[in-house]
Figure 1: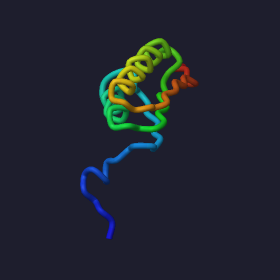
Figure 2: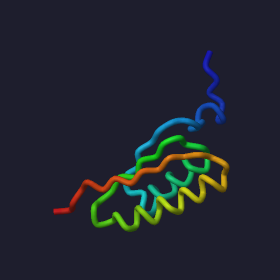
Figure 3: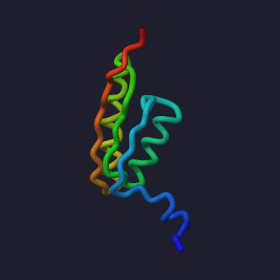
Figure 4: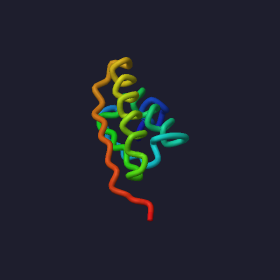
Length: 83
């Protein structure tokens, strides 16, 4: 039987995730939580007009990853324009 204890159920080490809306609010909190817990690869996807904010978040998350002793890779992708 699988172990559904919290350490195994929510283990993100070496996993990948994609977050939309990571420049603020819940998306930012999710990104910080994943980085703090050792996510392996994180894509931050957002609107083109928020690219500067997402790049600032990327820098912040890289520092958090290093401080936590993880080697998370973080990428920003902003393909969407608001029409």
